[in-house]
Every structure is written in structure tokens, then in C-alpha cells.
Amino acid sequence: MIERLTIQAIQLLKQLIETPSFSSEEEQTAQHIESWFKQQGIPFTRTHHNVWATNKYFDESKPTLLLNSHHDTVKPNNGYTKDPFTAIVEEGKLYGLGSNDAGGCLVSLLATFAYFYDKKELKYNLVIVASAEEESSGPNGLNSMLSVIPKIDVAIVGEPTLMNLAIAEKGLVVFDAVVKGTPSHAAHPNEDNAIYNTVPVLEWFKEYRFEKVSSVLGEVKMTVTQINAGKQHNAVPANVDLVVDVRVNDQYTNKEIAEILQKEAPCSLTPRSLRLNSSSIPQEHALVQAGLAIGRSTYGSPTLSDQAVLSCPSLKLGPGDSTRSHSADEFIHLQEIEEGIIIYIELLNKVL
Image (cartoon, rainbow, N blue to C red):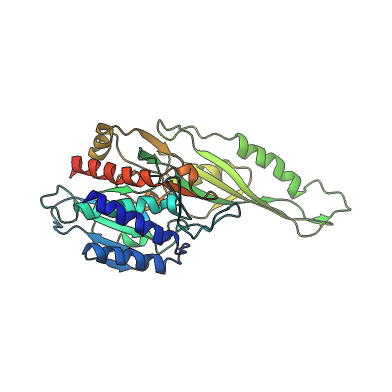
């Protein structure tokens, strides 16, 4: 059964690669996932471009485990030498946009769900959501599903982790910052030039350190990622606009980060959103212990995923390598998918 599910999973991944599915444009990949559920004889529901299902013997008296990964992609960068929308297999690698992030994870979780779908006497209910809009943190992604699907007690979020256990994940707050000055003609003296005023502000962001350091996620990381000012060569602008990317560890809430920076930063700061908090699962949780028992290692992940919208304990786990995500000529090893399905099943066999 596992061999059949693996073959079908790889075939589905090839279809997903060859179907453009940028965030909020996942109509056709959702149809491919629907067809896969029909092929397995599993009833499903589609909400927006999210496709989801529950196990056959769902029992409301039991806790519920969510299996989730996404089928949207970023747009391909200019470095591609292969067609990002052609599923190419070379030397055991499957190339194509979304192959690694997170198509391999998604099809492996779908295969795992199908394996357990009709098994009786499970300790947990299973819900699987093939979600949309993960890459854009859009309004119609997994966050929109939490009021639709049954209440979730714990989750496995499929992202490329080399099938190791990401037991914590940094949150994200993006700030719009403004450094002010006095606008003037470039030919006249000006001791309050907003662009010059920005130099010590940039130095402050570079040197600032948050006090609390996580044993799993390390320090909060703050990076100025965009700067914009001025419209013409002979005019000093009134403001310099900055964008600041802050990756938050599990020692702070996003609200706390915003309060600290708005109090201490030498410029005005406005957070775009406070909803993408850090997430984690206790080391002693049964899922983590099961993973350790089968030889997987734990670590803290610096990258953001749909874990950020979950309020329950969640584990990030999946085939593929995060360093390949959003890269040119993205790929996943076929063997990684085969092993991923086996490890997912082995892990859940110890918990379910």
C-alpha cells in the first residue's frame, strides 16, 4: 500500500509543478488535489482553494491532529535555467517550482493521511488541510480554515526540514519606519537632512539586541530590508522610509516586540501585523518523543510557515531542504519523498 501511495504522490507532485499556483491563484492545483481524493475514494470538502478531509472514523470525543501543508508557490526568480513549470526528473531529482516548498511535503502528508484514513480505534482524529495562500499569509489560507474544520489539539505542518523535528519556529513582525528631517533645496544649508539622520538610525538597528535569548531559537533577529527616499536630485526629502523585518523567538510575543521597539527606537515605527507569532511544541509531547524514538533530531527553525496562525502545539516536519526553497532550479530528491512518507507513517504509528 505504501508503495502505491508513494507512486501516486509523486505523480500528483508532477501535476502540481506543471500547474501555476501563485498565492490566491490556486484554483487549478486545488482541482488536482480534489482529483487525488476522488482517486483514493476519500470524501473531501473544498473551502476557497483549501481542500480538506477527516478520517473515516472521526470521533468528537477524541483529540484531533491536523496534517497541513500548502499548494501555493512564490513566483520563479530570474535565475532559473530549467522551465519552472515542467516536472523534470534527472539523476533522482524532481525539478520544478514548488517541488521542495512545499509540494513534496504536501503529497507525502496526503499519502500518510490516506494510509490512516480508514483505520479504526485511532487515539487521535485526523484532519488534513491542503492549504492556499501560505506564501503570502493571505486571508483565505489556513487561518481562514480554523473556524471551519474541527477544533485542533496538535498539528504537523509540512515544510522541508530534512525530516527532522522543528520544535519551534520564529514569528515575524514587519515594521514601517520613518526617519524625519527638514525638506529643503539641495543648494541651501540644512542641518536636519533626513537622509543623513538615517545613518545613526541604521546603526542603531544594526547594533540593537533584545535581552531574552531562546534555548531553541536563539536571539530575536532584526534586519532593515528596504529604504526609500527622495524624488529628485535637487530636493532634500522630508522623510526616509525604512522597512524592518523582525524574526521573533519564543521568549516574546509580537505585541511585546512592538511595544519595546516603539519605546526605544530612534524613529517612528508602525507594525503591519502582529498575528504571525512564534510557535512551538513541548519537548515532552508525544509527537516529539515519537520522532526522537525513531532517530530524528530536533532544532529551532528561523523561517515562517502556517504554524504562525495556529494556537495549538505544532511540529514542523517534512521532506526536502529549506535552503532550496525559493531558489532557482528548485528540486526535491524522489528518495526524500519515499523516505518522508515512511517516516511520517512510522511516527504516527507510535502516536495513533
